[in-house]
Image (cartoon, rainbow, N blue to C red):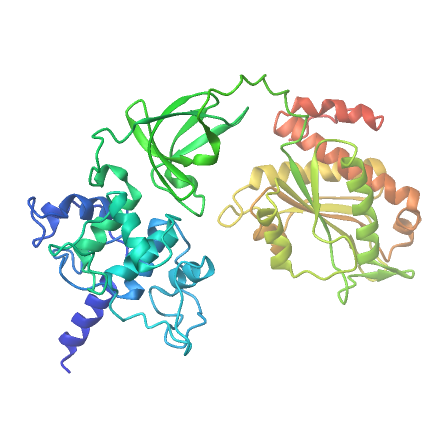
Length: 486
């Protein structure tokens, strides 16, 4: 086969699966003019990156739709994760452009494969199968091709063939698929089934002290990218239709979708203003006791660094537990985490700052304390915040254990470099130093160090972030804010 023919085939097969920029179907597709019956729907879906042309100039409206293409388009319309991945089907490789959407829809029981372990992504989709997929994807109620087709026709989403039938066994073409999908997503495109005003049901927003997200399209996976407005408790909306758990509504000439469970037919009672949040309740501190399990860290005088780190971290957390500030510990027992796992912990658990705790060692010939921060913003952008946090940490450690001050230092350390929040690593002392031993060997002193790291966190927020609401927590432990050090 000639090379140009191979390239053309690849382009045709993959074109429907690759997102494209916004277009006007009648202006960009030479085969979709202003008078084409599906021009508006194709433009609507193209501009939402749900469907696209076979090329930049041709849509090919009469080409049949395959099962793989249908999965990709429905998956995009639902906002699902289309990242390519391995699948459970022997004929859908990880490189297949629809593999991610296929597995997402399989997990949601929207689509399935065949008994022989295949999915058959290139098989042409029939109109009856299309009706079932849309009913399942948007919870419209139809369970087989007959009932699913009736639902689509009753809702003005689909129309029958010229012979009066739905055409259940006829393969569906791209233009028809676009029409049906656009009408499912946006009731403005639907065929009127009686009342010319589709927004005819009055409902009230019932969310208490919260707000209700109004979205540009219904989604199974919540995404902040399509929130177009926020509605308040008691606000009046006009409902046109329901798509699964989503209501298609109109508010002040703005149309969109909301979760119907937050609508009521009667006006809800007024909600008293919510009490102000507790001081620091919006803050989560990540506490990282270094090392663990088969990685003991440094050793000295019968002590293992991993155990000292964990003990002090537990004391530190006990002080936070007396406040509304939240904490998450990377480990609470003798467990091992890789440096990457530790660095990603704050992002995983919505942390706000990261404190990694360690003990130093150097052949019994050094002692003292130091703290580190990462000074290049290319990976962790919080350089100034991390430096300030490290500064307050070292200052409070010096108060707790008056050892040699080895300074606040720059450190190209993975737990700092790969982190996503202000981060510091503290070396609380030398585990092989006889001078430092008299402090870390005592649980009373280890508790004092936990208190110091707690206070250092308060200092950072109080001085650097301006969180004066946290001042009350100093007095709880008989302390007061430090001097401003940054």
